[in-house]
Length: 338
Image 1 (cartoon, rainbow, N blue to C red):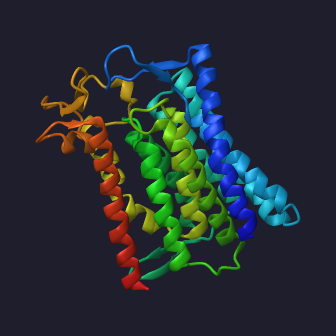
Image 2: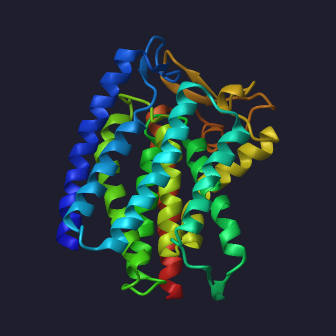
Image 3: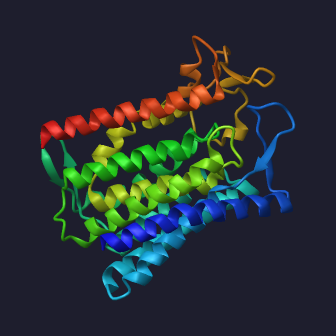
């Protein structure tokens, strides 16, 4: 398993980089571009670079499946997961091209939870610190769509500056992987545990291949195609490995960002529908300032630039550090518990 996984991971790095390059060129050719409003005027980038990630990530999984075709259970489960993530990716791609309403997008990104239920790709309990495993045979299936909708849209709401979303998801995936590797809540012989390892490793490798395209100054935007898919992948890994509580704690900055946005705008709307922006870019000097308007949505970027303006790169790195610190503290907390 591990040799095959290593080979698939290496394939994932290079093919994700390659596929993203192809997607960027194709989108430039057809004019699927958006202006980078945080840089000097006139800089347009491909809108859905995340599609390249999906191609590379899927290709690495297919390579692994080909090398393990004899294991029918894992083969079938990986096919199901691929279809689920591609569904979310297509929802995001449609939103990049045609625009979906906020409520519609939330409802569509909840649907994978229903698919996970019917495919029986879950164990109906949640680990709660100090209480242990809480069995939720009736409640947990109801929570599945909520987990997917929240994870997908939380990552989507962080995707406001080049490099933020893939970097944050990479950090969270690494620490989630380490958590169930060192503090497993399922028997290591459980097929779901094994699938979680496969998904985590191939997601990490594909993000490594993808990040050079999106990290500052960025060659393309991720689009909702990328950000919604990453949230769905994180949700899938957490559900399979029973690290839901760990992921919530590690992603506290992202969860907080989502709640503050929703509470300040008092509803679910698309970012392009906001009348007041949370930050103001000084495009000539390449710095980001907090919007002093009292009606401006409260976001992490708003709070980080409230006292002093930051360059876009400094802001992205600050968000990386926040998520890394919360992930490290969560790992320490789990180490004490176990």
